[in-house]
Image 1: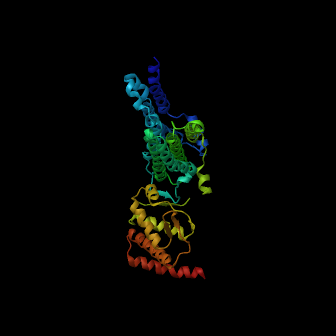
Image 2: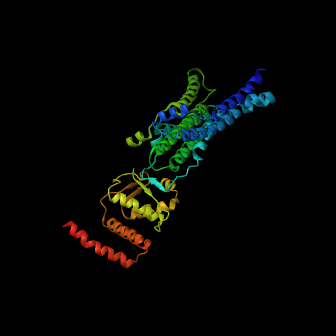
Image 3: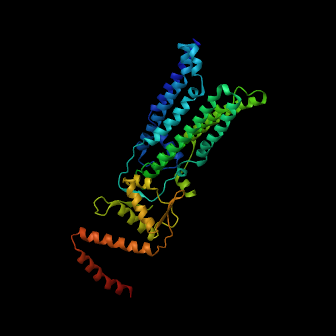
Length: 273
Length: 128
């Protein structure tokens, strides 16, 4: 009975994620979003709801798929308990984080947006206009950090050497999704050269940037945690295991904060730069 | 906010329209020295033209010393005091626009020159 319950958790969580993700944002959500990014919605509420809803759907589908993959070990336990251990590894366990980062990337780079007329503002768009660059730099810094930890872990625990390098791959994927996504977002054509709609366009880019960086940060943190040596951590070295868990939790908390609560003004960021 | 626009009905090629408007904005001080301009990709995407079109315009502006490009800092407006090259380029550009407009109205080159000549004494009188 317990095995069935375990096997059903992942699909149920995936369904919940899909249910939440496929819902169109409500009016008050759009207004709260406008308040976070300090833009005036004017009469563009429907446009904002449609764009936010589209991004939400794409991200939800990717996360749901990742959750299903992460639920493979208990499912394999039902079919063949002897083989379930082969699915219990950091690649499968963190599948939902990988897919979340990919989903955030897809949600931004496949936005089809054509300008309404052949007119452009003479204003350069930079990544720093849309997101605090320190978060992006933290993701980039995770690659050398994870590599160093993987080298140490491989030396200490040669029998599980590939765990560390899966972690390094995770930080590289986090870096790539953040970099490609942020570039695509910045280079996306502007809807209009000026006015309220331009402000909304900028705010939508900032929202996408925060979600990209948030999911990348969570993946990078979890990947670094995976590279830390586990079984060799006896005595005081056991703190390493605790540090790894805390790092993963910190990554998730940052993702939540950046995606849902962060406040940002593109105009203020431009003025400050 | 300074904007540039492309007129699809104009006989002037798009890259020349971009170049001319940017040059005018820089020379008249609407865009100040050191201002960072959009990248080629961004401006091309916003204007819905090919990147090569914008790249060509930027190259000509750089040759006229109105903008400068450095890899890390992108494209920025150069010192707004135009050198002799930029001044001559701006005059040629203004003449080119005027002539194109006269031709579009069905006039001839001679009529265009005549209009300039007849406009000249009035300006000099007004200046006194």
